[in-house]
Image 1 (cartoon, helix red, strand yellow):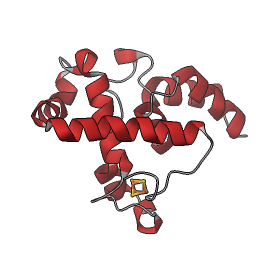
Image 2: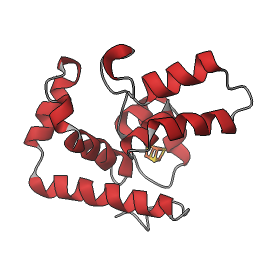
Image 3: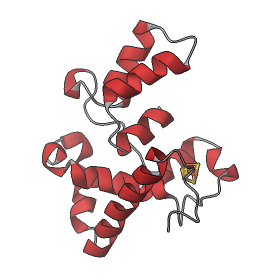
Length: 143
Ligand code: SF4
């Protein structure tokens, strides 16, 4: 779900991501990969399987895992996932604005300052460009 979250926040094509899971994991089975990645992880099947996109920013990953303790980013200050999360909601605002399951974040998005929304968009583009080039995303590159 962590990988699917990041891929979804970066607008990775759900079918391509699902096919990548098939290739990357020797224990990939159709009854796991297709519904979990295509349906739940990326929201590619809409509300057929889930009622909202399963996306999160840094706070949720920090709370639910121990990944952040060894990461070069700080989940509370400079982690790009926070901006990626808000940029995702902004890009898909028209599709998500009437979804009651994601109402509170959409209200928060509306209140988000324009400068922050611009920063979110800039970080989204920067992270995508870095990854498309095959480079690592580090605090030096994302600021
Ligand atoms: S601080 Fe690092 S591990 Fe934690 S959410 Fe951000 S990128 Fe992921």
